[in-house]
Length: 173
Image 1 (cartoon, one colour):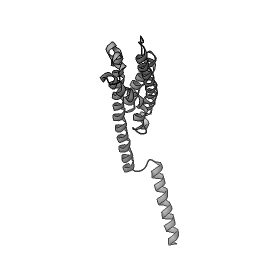
Image 2: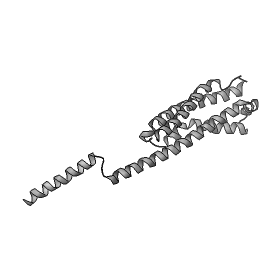
Image 3: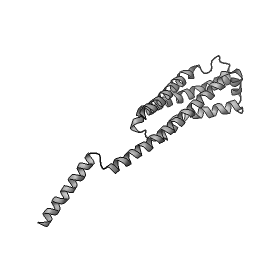
Image 4: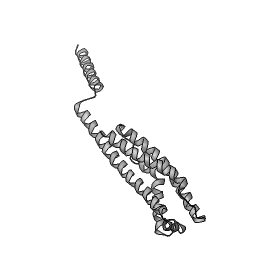
């Protein structure tokens, strides 16, 4: 008889536990989950904004180098300050996906921001290869518009980067 009551009691406890977990768990579990989600969102938001600043800085740096005859002429020699700065900016674009990947998985509320950022990185990385080609072209001749081929992917990447930050703001509300 005692064994039967013990088994019934155990089944009742299990049923209550399953019912509680099916309803979302205890208030303490929900609070812990909410805190973890908020922490992940804060980490991702800060990281994506850092990524945005870095990519924008690289784009601006590339634009500055190619905006003047003196900047383009500085690309003739590897040791110049302009060449070193361009190399740094190209590296930022070339490693875009790596930097984004270091943020880890995006919280569900930032999925759209992540998708835009991934597309932006694909364009930045493509554009960076075209900037490299432009530098080679500058060293071999005097092109009228050395960045002509790179302009499309870099511009599209910048638009997607900006859309990522807009989606980041929308996802946090």
